[in-house]
Image (cartoon, rainbow, N blue to C red):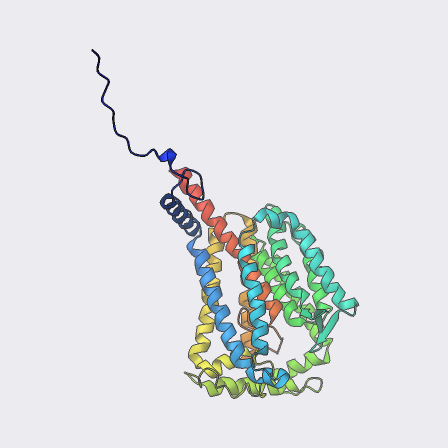
Length: 418
Protein backbone atom coordinates (compact mmCIF):
# COMPACT_ATOMS: atom_id res chain seq x y z
CA UNK A 1 0.00 0.00 0.00
CA UNK A 2 1.35 3.34 -1.01
CA UNK A 3 1.03 6.42 1.09
CA UNK A 4 0.63 9.88 -0.34
CA UNK A 5 3.30 12.43 0.55
CA UNK A 6 2.43 14.79 3.38
CA UNK A 7 0.72 17.98 2.25
CA UNK A 8 2.79 21.08 2.91
CA UNK A 9 0.88 24.14 4.13
CA UNK A 10 1.71 27.22 2.15
CA UNK A 11 1.00 30.86 2.87
CA UNK A 12 -0.90 32.99 0.42
CA UNK A 13 0.80 33.37 -2.91
CA UNK A 14 1.85 36.99 -3.48
CA UNK A 15 0.74 36.63 -7.08
CA UNK A 16 -2.80 36.03 -5.83
CA UNK A 17 -2.85 39.38 -3.96
CA UNK A 18 -4.37 42.40 -5.65
CA UNK A 19 -1.75 44.73 -7.01
CA UNK A 20 -1.31 48.10 -5.33
CA UNK A 21 -1.90 51.14 -7.45
CA UNK A 22 1.26 52.35 -9.14
CA UNK A 23 3.91 50.24 -10.73
CA UNK A 24 2.73 46.62 -11.25
CA UNK A 25 4.16 44.13 -8.81
CA UNK A 26 5.64 46.84 -6.53
CA UNK A 27 4.51 47.37 -2.98
CA UNK A 28 3.83 50.76 -1.46
CA UNK A 29 6.91 50.50 0.80
CA UNK A 30 9.22 49.67 -2.09
CA UNK A 31 7.74 52.47 -4.17
CA UNK A 32 8.29 54.96 -1.37
CA UNK A 33 11.84 53.72 -0.91
CA UNK A 34 12.61 54.05 -4.62
CA UNK A 35 11.10 57.53 -4.64
CA UNK A 36 13.41 58.57 -1.81
CA UNK A 37 16.37 57.09 -3.69
CA UNK A 38 15.40 59.00 -6.85
CA UNK A 39 15.03 62.25 -4.93
CA UNK A 40 18.37 61.69 -3.24
CA UNK A 41 20.07 61.06 -6.54
CA UNK A 42 18.51 64.20 -7.99
CA UNK A 43 19.79 66.27 -5.06
CA UNK A 44 23.24 64.69 -5.19
CA UNK A 45 23.49 65.35 -8.92
CA UNK A 46 23.98 69.06 -8.27
CA UNK A 47 27.38 70.43 -7.29
CA UNK A 48 28.22 72.57 -4.29
CA UNK A 49 28.79 75.50 -6.66
CA UNK A 50 25.24 75.08 -7.94
CA UNK A 51 23.71 75.28 -4.45
CA UNK A 52 26.03 78.08 -3.37
CA UNK A 53 25.11 80.16 -6.41
CA UNK A 54 21.43 79.40 -5.87
CA UNK A 55 21.58 80.32 -2.19
CA UNK A 56 23.37 83.63 -2.74
CA UNK A 57 20.99 84.56 -5.56
CA UNK A 58 17.84 83.80 -3.56
CA UNK A 59 19.16 85.71 -0.54
CA UNK A 60 19.95 88.76 -2.68
CA UNK A 61 16.55 88.64 -4.37
CA UNK A 62 14.68 88.46 -1.04
CA UNK A 63 16.87 91.17 0.44
CA UNK A 64 16.22 93.30 -2.63
CA UNK A 65 12.45 92.88 -2.33
CA UNK A 66 12.59 94.01 1.29
CA UNK A 67 14.62 97.10 0.37
CA UNK A 68 12.39 97.89 -2.62
CA UNK A 69 9.36 97.80 -0.32
CA UNK A 70 11.07 100.07 2.19
CA UNK A 71 12.48 102.55 -0.33
CA UNK A 72 9.45 102.80 -2.63
CA UNK A 73 6.51 102.87 -0.20
CA UNK A 74 6.22 106.66 0.01
CA UNK A 75 6.52 107.29 -3.74
CA UNK A 76 4.15 104.41 -4.42
CA UNK A 77 1.55 106.03 -2.18
CA UNK A 78 2.07 109.39 -3.89
CA UNK A 79 1.65 107.85 -7.36
CA UNK A 80 -1.12 105.30 -6.83
CA UNK A 81 -2.45 105.84 -3.29
CA UNK A 82 -1.06 102.38 -2.50
CA UNK A 83 2.08 101.84 -0.43
CA UNK A 84 2.74 98.45 -2.05
CA UNK A 85 2.23 99.11 -5.78
CA UNK A 86 5.92 99.16 -6.78
CA UNK A 87 6.68 96.29 -4.44
CA UNK A 88 3.93 94.13 -5.97
CA UNK A 89 5.22 94.97 -9.44
CA UNK A 90 8.75 93.96 -8.52
CA UNK A 91 7.45 90.83 -6.81
CA UNK A 92 5.52 89.86 -9.94
CA UNK A 93 8.64 90.15 -12.09
CA UNK A 94 10.56 88.12 -9.52
CA UNK A 95 7.93 85.37 -9.64
CA UNK A 96 8.42 85.31 -13.42
CA UNK A 97 12.20 85.25 -13.13
CA UNK A 98 12.41 82.42 -10.58
CA UNK A 99 10.87 79.63 -12.69
CA UNK A 100 12.70 80.93 -15.75
CA UNK A 101 15.97 80.65 -13.84
CA UNK A 102 15.29 77.01 -12.95
CA UNK A 103 14.08 76.17 -16.46
CA UNK A 104 17.18 77.70 -18.03
CA UNK A 105 19.37 75.80 -15.57
CA UNK A 106 18.10 72.57 -17.18
CA UNK A 107 18.72 73.60 -20.78
CA UNK A 108 21.67 71.76 -22.40
CA UNK A 109 24.53 73.68 -23.95
CA UNK A 110 23.72 72.33 -27.40
CA UNK A 111 20.50 74.36 -27.44
CA UNK A 112 22.39 77.64 -27.07
CA UNK A 113 24.94 76.67 -29.70
CA UNK A 114 22.23 75.94 -32.24
CA UNK A 115 19.90 78.88 -31.57
CA UNK A 116 22.10 81.77 -30.42
CA UNK A 117 22.21 83.53 -33.79
CA UNK A 118 18.42 83.61 -33.92
CA UNK A 119 18.15 84.79 -30.29
CA UNK A 120 20.66 87.60 -30.80
CA UNK A 121 19.05 88.68 -34.04
CA UNK A 122 15.57 88.74 -32.48
CA UNK A 123 16.76 90.78 -29.49
CA UNK A 124 18.47 93.35 -31.75
CA UNK A 125 15.37 93.51 -33.96
CA UNK A 126 13.15 94.37 -30.97
CA UNK A 127 15.66 97.04 -29.91
CA UNK A 128 15.53 98.41 -33.45
CA UNK A 129 11.73 98.65 -33.16
CA UNK A 130 12.25 100.83 -30.11
CA UNK A 131 14.24 103.30 -32.19
CA UNK A 132 12.08 103.54 -35.31
CA UNK A 133 8.49 102.79 -34.27
CA UNK A 134 5.95 104.34 -31.90
CA UNK A 135 6.44 101.34 -29.62
CA UNK A 136 9.59 102.98 -28.30
CA UNK A 137 9.36 104.91 -25.03
CA UNK A 138 11.77 107.64 -23.92
CA UNK A 139 12.52 107.88 -20.20
CA UNK A 140 15.09 110.24 -18.74
CA UNK A 141 16.44 111.18 -22.15
CA UNK A 142 17.04 107.54 -23.18
CA UNK A 143 14.90 105.77 -25.78
CA UNK A 144 15.50 102.20 -24.68
CA UNK A 145 12.08 101.02 -23.51
CA UNK A 146 9.32 99.34 -25.47
CA UNK A 147 5.63 99.49 -24.62
CA UNK A 148 3.33 96.70 -25.79
CA UNK A 149 -0.09 97.02 -24.21
CA UNK A 150 0.47 97.38 -20.49
CA UNK A 151 3.97 95.92 -20.60
CA UNK A 152 7.02 98.20 -20.56
CA UNK A 153 10.48 96.62 -20.77
CA UNK A 154 14.04 97.10 -21.98
CA UNK A 155 15.04 95.00 -25.00
CA UNK A 156 18.67 95.83 -24.18
CA UNK A 157 18.43 93.35 -21.30
CA UNK A 158 17.62 90.60 -23.80
CA UNK A 159 20.60 91.71 -25.89
CA UNK A 160 22.82 91.29 -22.82
CA UNK A 161 21.76 87.66 -22.39
CA UNK A 162 22.13 86.89 -26.08
CA UNK A 163 25.51 88.59 -26.32
CA UNK A 164 27.15 86.74 -23.42
CA UNK A 165 26.05 83.41 -24.92
CA UNK A 166 27.14 84.47 -28.41
CA UNK A 167 30.60 85.35 -27.08
CA UNK A 168 30.98 81.89 -25.57
CA UNK A 169 29.81 80.08 -28.71
CA UNK A 170 31.92 82.06 -31.19
CA UNK A 171 35.11 82.27 -29.12
CA UNK A 172 34.91 78.55 -28.36
CA UNK A 173 34.85 77.81 -32.09
CA UNK A 174 37.81 80.12 -32.68
CA UNK A 175 39.83 79.18 -29.59
CA UNK A 176 42.80 77.97 -31.66
CA UNK A 177 42.80 81.10 -33.86
CA UNK A 178 42.60 83.88 -31.29
CA UNK A 179 46.31 84.72 -31.60
CA UNK A 180 45.44 86.26 -34.96
CA UNK A 181 43.78 89.65 -34.43
CA UNK A 182 41.68 89.23 -37.56
CA UNK A 183 39.88 86.23 -36.06
CA UNK A 184 39.12 88.38 -33.01
CA UNK A 185 38.07 91.54 -34.79
CA UNK A 186 36.03 89.94 -37.56
CA UNK A 187 33.28 88.44 -35.42
CA UNK A 188 33.44 90.87 -32.48
CA UNK A 189 33.41 94.25 -34.23
CA UNK A 190 30.47 93.72 -36.62
CA UNK A 191 28.31 91.48 -34.41
CA UNK A 192 29.02 92.51 -30.82
CA UNK A 193 29.71 96.07 -31.94
CA UNK A 194 26.47 96.17 -33.88
CA UNK A 195 24.47 94.82 -30.93
CA UNK A 196 25.98 97.45 -28.65
CA UNK A 197 25.46 100.08 -31.36
CA UNK A 198 21.67 99.72 -31.41
CA UNK A 199 21.71 100.37 -27.65
CA UNK A 200 23.99 103.38 -28.13
CA UNK A 201 21.48 104.84 -30.60
CA UNK A 202 18.92 104.83 -27.80
CA UNK A 203 21.21 106.97 -25.67
CA UNK A 204 21.69 104.54 -22.77
CA UNK A 205 25.37 105.14 -21.97
CA UNK A 206 25.31 103.11 -18.74
CA UNK A 207 24.08 99.93 -20.41
CA UNK A 208 26.52 100.52 -23.27
CA UNK A 209 29.48 100.67 -20.88
CA UNK A 210 28.35 97.52 -19.06
CA UNK A 211 27.97 95.61 -22.34
CA UNK A 212 31.37 96.77 -23.57
CA UNK A 213 32.92 95.68 -20.27
CA UNK A 214 31.61 92.13 -20.42
CA UNK A 215 32.61 91.78 -24.08
CA UNK A 216 36.19 92.68 -23.11
CA UNK A 217 35.93 90.36 -20.10
CA UNK A 218 34.80 87.46 -22.27
CA UNK A 219 37.71 88.09 -24.64
CA UNK A 220 40.15 88.12 -21.72
CA UNK A 221 38.97 84.79 -20.31
CA UNK A 222 39.02 83.31 -23.82
CA UNK A 223 42.76 83.98 -23.93
CA UNK A 224 42.90 86.93 -26.33
CA UNK A 225 46.21 88.78 -26.17
CA UNK A 226 46.38 91.78 -23.85
CA UNK A 227 47.49 94.20 -26.55
CA UNK A 228 44.33 93.43 -28.51
CA UNK A 229 42.26 94.02 -25.38
CA UNK A 230 44.04 97.30 -24.70
CA UNK A 231 43.23 98.45 -28.22
CA UNK A 232 39.60 97.53 -27.65
CA UNK A 233 39.57 99.36 -24.32
CA UNK A 234 40.89 102.53 -25.97
CA UNK A 235 38.23 102.23 -28.66
CA UNK A 236 35.46 101.83 -26.08
CA UNK A 237 36.74 104.88 -24.16
CA UNK A 238 36.74 107.00 -27.31
CA UNK A 239 33.20 105.96 -28.20
CA UNK A 240 32.04 106.63 -24.62
CA UNK A 241 33.48 110.15 -24.72
CA UNK A 242 31.82 110.88 -28.06
CA UNK A 243 28.45 109.58 -26.83
CA UNK A 244 28.75 111.57 -23.60
CA UNK A 245 29.56 114.79 -25.45
CA UNK A 246 26.63 114.32 -27.83
CA UNK A 247 24.07 114.95 -25.07
CA UNK A 248 23.62 118.05 -22.90
CA UNK A 249 22.08 115.88 -20.18
CA UNK A 250 25.09 113.56 -20.04
CA UNK A 251 27.51 116.50 -20.05
CA UNK A 252 25.52 117.97 -17.17
CA UNK A 253 25.96 114.74 -15.20
CA UNK A 254 29.71 114.91 -15.71
CA UNK A 255 29.73 118.57 -14.61
CA UNK A 256 27.69 117.70 -11.51
CA UNK A 257 30.32 115.14 -10.50
CA UNK A 258 32.89 117.92 -10.21
CA UNK A 259 30.59 120.31 -8.34
CA UNK A 260 29.15 122.07 -11.36
CA UNK A 261 25.52 122.52 -12.32
CA UNK A 262 23.43 120.96 -15.04
CA UNK A 263 20.98 123.22 -16.83
CA UNK A 264 19.67 120.28 -18.89
CA UNK A 265 19.12 118.10 -15.82
CA UNK A 266 19.14 120.16 -12.61
CA UNK A 267 17.90 117.23 -10.51
CA UNK A 268 21.31 115.54 -10.88
CA UNK A 269 22.92 117.81 -8.30
CA UNK A 270 19.98 117.31 -5.99
CA UNK A 271 20.18 113.54 -6.40
CA UNK A 272 23.93 113.33 -5.75
CA UNK A 273 23.75 115.57 -2.67
CA UNK A 274 20.83 113.69 -1.12
CA UNK A 275 22.56 110.39 -1.81
CA UNK A 276 25.47 111.65 0.27
CA UNK A 277 23.10 112.83 3.02
CA UNK A 278 21.45 109.41 3.15
CA UNK A 279 24.76 107.58 3.50
CA UNK A 280 26.04 110.05 6.10
CA UNK A 281 22.90 109.88 8.26
CA UNK A 282 23.06 106.07 8.37
CA UNK A 283 26.32 105.93 10.31
CA UNK A 284 27.55 102.51 11.32
CA UNK A 285 24.31 100.81 12.35
CA UNK A 286 21.75 102.79 10.35
CA UNK A 287 18.52 104.48 11.36
CA UNK A 288 16.58 101.22 11.15
CA UNK A 289 14.75 99.36 8.40
CA UNK A 290 11.90 101.49 7.09
CA UNK A 291 13.04 104.66 8.88
CA UNK A 292 14.77 106.42 5.98
CA UNK A 293 14.15 110.14 5.68
CA UNK A 294 15.58 110.42 2.16
CA UNK A 295 12.84 108.25 0.63
CA UNK A 296 10.26 110.90 1.55
CA UNK A 297 10.61 112.52 -1.90
CA UNK A 298 14.11 113.80 -1.13
CA UNK A 299 16.12 111.25 -3.14
CA UNK A 300 15.04 110.59 -6.76
CA UNK A 301 15.17 106.96 -7.94
CA UNK A 302 15.48 105.75 -4.35
CA UNK A 303 14.26 102.26 -5.22
CA UNK A 304 16.22 101.87 -8.47
CA UNK A 305 19.53 103.58 -9.22
CA UNK A 306 20.10 104.93 -5.68
CA UNK A 307 18.83 102.03 -3.59
CA UNK A 308 22.35 101.55 -2.19
CA UNK A 309 22.01 104.97 -0.53
CA UNK A 310 18.81 103.82 1.21
CA UNK A 311 20.57 100.62 2.31
CA UNK A 312 23.39 102.71 3.79
CA UNK A 313 20.91 104.98 5.53
CA UNK A 314 18.62 102.33 7.01
CA UNK A 315 21.14 99.54 7.65
CA UNK A 316 24.26 101.67 8.03
CA UNK A 317 27.82 100.84 7.15
CA UNK A 318 27.22 97.24 8.24
CA UNK A 319 24.38 96.80 5.72
CA UNK A 320 26.44 98.38 2.95
CA UNK A 321 29.36 96.05 3.69
CA UNK A 322 27.01 93.04 3.63
CA UNK A 323 25.88 94.03 0.13
CA UNK A 324 29.49 94.34 -1.00
CA UNK A 325 30.32 90.94 0.49
CA UNK A 326 27.37 89.37 -1.33
CA UNK A 327 28.76 90.49 -4.66
CA UNK A 328 32.25 89.33 -3.66
CA UNK A 329 30.81 85.88 -2.83
CA UNK A 330 28.94 85.89 -6.14
CA UNK A 331 32.19 86.61 -7.99
CA UNK A 332 33.99 83.82 -6.09
CA UNK A 333 31.33 81.27 -7.09
CA UNK A 334 31.57 82.39 -10.71
CA UNK A 335 35.35 81.98 -10.61
CA UNK A 336 34.99 78.49 -9.12
CA UNK A 337 32.65 77.49 -11.96
CA UNK A 338 35.03 78.99 -14.52
CA UNK A 339 37.93 77.06 -13.01
CA UNK A 340 35.96 73.79 -13.04
CA UNK A 341 34.88 74.15 -16.68
CA UNK A 342 36.83 72.17 -19.23
CA UNK A 343 35.04 73.65 -22.25
CA UNK A 344 35.68 77.15 -23.60
CA UNK A 345 32.00 77.91 -24.17
CA UNK A 346 30.83 77.73 -20.53
CA UNK A 347 34.06 79.31 -19.31
CA UNK A 348 33.74 82.40 -21.54
CA UNK A 349 29.98 82.75 -21.05
CA UNK A 350 30.28 82.47 -17.27
CA UNK A 351 33.10 85.02 -17.29
CA UNK A 352 31.04 87.46 -19.35
CA UNK A 353 28.06 87.08 -17.01
CA UNK A 354 30.35 87.59 -14.01
CA UNK A 355 31.75 90.82 -15.47
CA UNK A 356 28.22 91.94 -16.38
CA UNK A 357 26.77 91.56 -12.86
CA UNK A 358 29.83 92.53 -10.81
CA UNK A 359 30.83 95.48 -12.99
CA UNK A 360 27.25 96.74 -13.09
CA UNK A 361 27.13 96.56 -9.29
CA UNK A 362 30.42 98.47 -9.16
CA UNK A 363 29.03 101.18 -11.46
CA UNK A 364 25.82 101.52 -9.44
CA UNK A 365 27.64 101.79 -6.11
CA UNK A 366 30.31 104.11 -7.55
CA UNK A 367 27.58 106.47 -8.76
CA UNK A 368 26.02 106.61 -5.28
CA UNK A 369 29.43 107.24 -3.73
CA UNK A 370 30.12 110.06 -6.20
CA UNK A 371 33.10 108.34 -7.81
CA UNK A 372 31.72 108.43 -11.37
CA UNK A 373 28.92 110.41 -13.06
CA UNK A 374 25.32 109.28 -12.77
CA UNK A 375 24.82 106.57 -15.40
CA UNK A 376 21.47 105.11 -14.43
CA UNK A 377 22.12 101.37 -14.07
CA UNK A 378 20.34 99.29 -11.40
CA UNK A 379 21.99 97.27 -8.66
CA UNK A 380 21.69 93.67 -9.92
CA UNK A 381 19.17 91.45 -8.10
CA UNK A 382 18.43 94.21 -5.57
CA UNK A 383 17.16 97.37 -7.31
CA UNK A 384 13.64 97.71 -8.63
CA UNK A 385 13.41 97.03 -12.34
CA UNK A 386 11.42 94.21 -13.86
CA UNK A 387 13.29 93.29 -17.04
CA UNK A 388 16.64 93.83 -15.31
CA UNK A 389 15.63 91.37 -12.59
CA UNK A 390 14.42 88.77 -15.10
CA UNK A 391 17.52 89.06 -17.29
CA UNK A 392 19.86 88.76 -14.28
CA UNK A 393 18.07 85.64 -13.04
CA UNK A 394 18.11 84.06 -16.50
CA UNK A 395 21.84 84.77 -16.74
CA UNK A 396 22.41 83.11 -13.37
CA UNK A 397 20.28 80.17 -14.52
CA UNK A 398 22.65 79.74 -17.47
CA UNK A 399 25.63 79.63 -15.10
CA UNK A 400 23.76 77.13 -12.90
CA UNK A 401 23.39 74.86 -15.93
CA UNK A 402 27.16 75.05 -16.43
CA UNK A 403 27.70 74.13 -12.77
CA UNK A 404 25.48 71.06 -13.27
CA UNK A 405 27.47 70.12 -16.37
CA UNK A 406 30.74 70.48 -14.44
CA UNK A 407 29.41 68.11 -11.77
CA UNK A 408 28.42 65.52 -14.40
CA UNK A 409 31.82 65.79 -16.08
CA UNK A 410 33.56 65.32 -12.72
CA UNK A 411 31.50 62.20 -11.96
CA UNK A 412 32.32 60.74 -15.38
CA UNK A 413 36.02 61.43 -14.87
CA UNK A 414 35.91 59.80 -11.43
CA UNK A 415 34.05 56.77 -12.79
CA UNK A 416 36.49 56.29 -15.65
CA UNK A 417 39.44 56.61 -13.26
CA UNK A 418 37.97 53.86 -11.09
